[in-house]
Image (cartoon, rainbow, N blue to C red; front, side, top):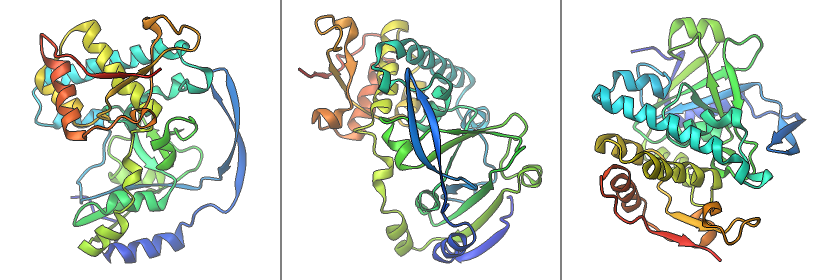
Length: 315
């Protein structure tokens, strides 16, 4: 098991130390973000370091796509998951022109978005918020938090996925995505030497889990338009390509947002059903149960004769 750079008895002690040593930025800068055909100005923190919280003492921290090669899934299921991810990417990229300009995700950020919403990719999730990292690290009886200094040259690429106005969960989590061809394991000695990344470990009491783990809104996607697009693209994959392996469908359904299909007419094509747009169910007042929706999605994606997928059509 990889060793932490410093171990604390409790999460509270660790948080107090990190908050002092790595405070939130006090300076801001303006940045320009292009989203589709629109250019937006943002006031942004001057990021000096990123954080990652883990709710156990995992031996390695590798990209989710790499973990597929060592998990207990059989090879053809792993291949199905990867092939499905590529098809979802193709479908999402093909739909960008149908979206209003302010709703189009940056095509270069498609893979980081898929990583954030549950698909396995070559990216690793980080955040600019220590509190967010503490939330994720507080979900178990012990945990670790990584602190990664941002400097040039870094040996890795940092993707900021907070900019899209309708990708609400990445904004709430102050989410960043990191990819590197040189770094495989973010706990390896070579990684720590190359990046100055540090890991801090601790034990977590039930009181701390209740206190630090209370920000459940960080996981919500029911009003997130980009999350809705990702789930809808999975439905389109099933309709265009046919069913996928049951185990692969169940695996994907357990990880991506379990959102029911909610549609509205396209403002430029109000009478053409081919141009129906996705709407987050929370914006349409649609109520659903996560566990039931995940099971329904897995059945829809895997059965040869697909059951009717319920949907809501807004006026």
